[in-house]
Length: 123
Image 1 (cartoon, rainbow, N blue to C red):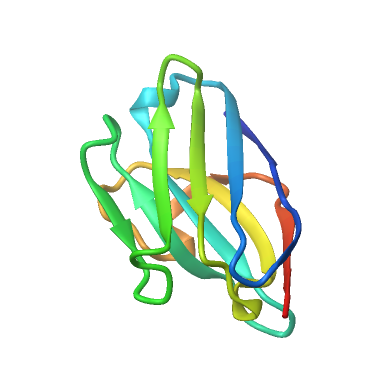
Image 2: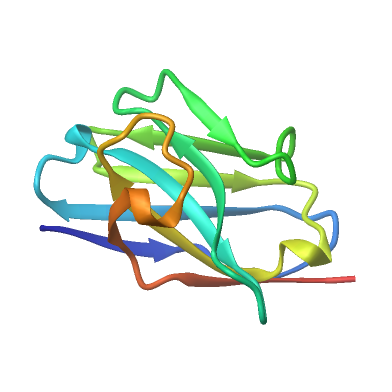
C-alpha cells in the first residue's frame, strides 16, 4: 500500500501561482511513477502531468504545458506540481496518484490515489 496526502491548494487570482505537494508513505516511493490529475466541477478526472521514477522524464497535458512543472524528491518521498499563470479553467480538485507504467496518462493506469486538494482560480 502507498498512502498519498496532497497539500498546497487554495484560492488564487488568475495569473498567480500555487505549488502543490504530495507526500507518500508506505512502499518504496521511487518504485512508482507519479502523476497529477484534476477534476473540475461536472467534469471527468483528467491527466495533468506525470513524472518517471527518477524524475528524468516528465509528461504534460496540452492545457498546462509551459505553465505547470512536475517534479519529485525521492529522498523526501514527495512529488510537487508548480502551477504558474493560473487560469479560471484550472479550477479543480487536484489529485496525486502512483502507478507503475512510464508515461501513464489514464486514471485506470494508476494504483494509489490521494484524497485531493482544492484549487480555485478567480478572475
